[in-house]
Image (cartoon, rainbow, N blue to C red):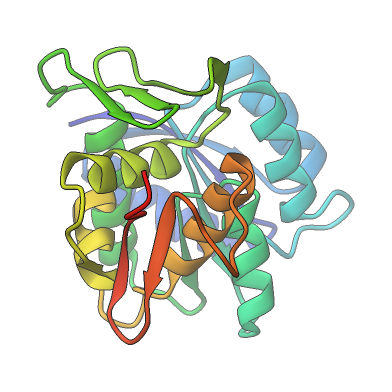
Length: 229
């Protein structure tokens, strides 16, 4: 598996390290050292995935992510030196598909990039199938979801998460199981990222988190498709 990766970080040594590992893995690499350059490179190069540092000079990583999400559905893996959960959750809510905290293992980053690209490349696309739950319709082949006929603007991770839940109504999935299903690899300690994706998905579905209609929380376990559908 190859592809073009945009690496955005203001630390030259990190960019050099990530470039080295990605090129060894067969990827083409485009670089940017600040937010403005990142947006220019993304528009010009149309990368298959963006590795995005949050702490950028000028336009920060969160604002870059906002702009990228307005323009394209390019997968994003965020890098952050910030340890606060709120920063990670905000990044995921903006549509990032994954995050890693610095310092990080570059081999793990390559593995995560491959996992995200596997599920967004269409290499293992399922047979044409329509999933329905009340007014919610998910077209797996067309990679589209609608609610009461209204298209839902979902990130790749949100779409896959919704599809997994609809494919097995009533089943309770643990966070680690969902992480493995939607990202291809489950990393213990990162399963709480699913909570952020569910929060974002509920907002797009108009679901009240206190009394959810579509995605129910099973406390101490994980999530399942709402029983009322």
